[in-house]
Image (cartoon, rainbow, N blue to C red; front, side, top):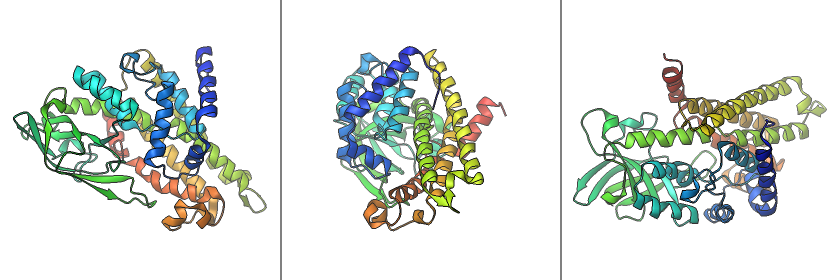
Length: 396
């Protein structure tokens, strides 16, 4: 996306491009390009390369081991990484828990957990949603009852992304049953190896067990693992979600997806001409490209606000909502461009292009289309984002 940046930012962009050219393993970028599932070892490999450079937690303050990037530098890094098909940085430790601990955690928690996030000792997952508390998160029922120096946790979390790999989970739990639902929630850090925890995979449309159910049966958690103050976890949860929703906007991912869509539309032929020359299809591509440019501009406005010291606000819901719509539209158009080759093949075909007929991008288009249906839900459903916008921005 062609935007105006300062000479310093342009120099940083050149540095990022050179770093990706020199250090991004081609086998990893090829798997990302074809929407193949990365193994835990491959994700950890890329995290280690970034950490060695000091860029794994670029947005963290230097005092916590980050690079102290500006909001614009983060935008540039994410955009260039997506364009180069670099594996995404898993957000749970870096983008979600890290900022919460830096703002609300104790010194002991910061000193222990933040370095372990960076060096790969801990793989975090998120324990927010429950079977009856997804978009209505405040209705969560997983309980934590104080028993001496421990909380005893009982309940269930669901849609826990990559929980099968995690050794820690940050959880919202109910520590008070009476009063407003939001006033009885606490934020706990739980070791996944604690007795009483069971992880059960959920297989998604594309055939991968990306998400899980997590069950807690009398799990004892040290009180020292409580972040902040008991019953004030809702404040920390909202702070985390504003960071998550801004990241979900995915300007870089959408930009890379649009480029892939155009390549496929040039390669696919309809009625003797490249699909990109079909007026109707070209108009649909132009429409989503205009939407992407508008969203990128809005994103830059928010980055400018962040550079001025303002925390993400309800505008992050606008980015999450529009970013979801744009990425899903690009996925749909790419699938349509692939034509009959994009038919949903068995999972064996989706995971092995040699077993699937047609262009190599066809199975990738199907995987992306199926997997990214989730964008409408996670991080707060599109309906919830519209309600936030209506109340907090429009005043309705």
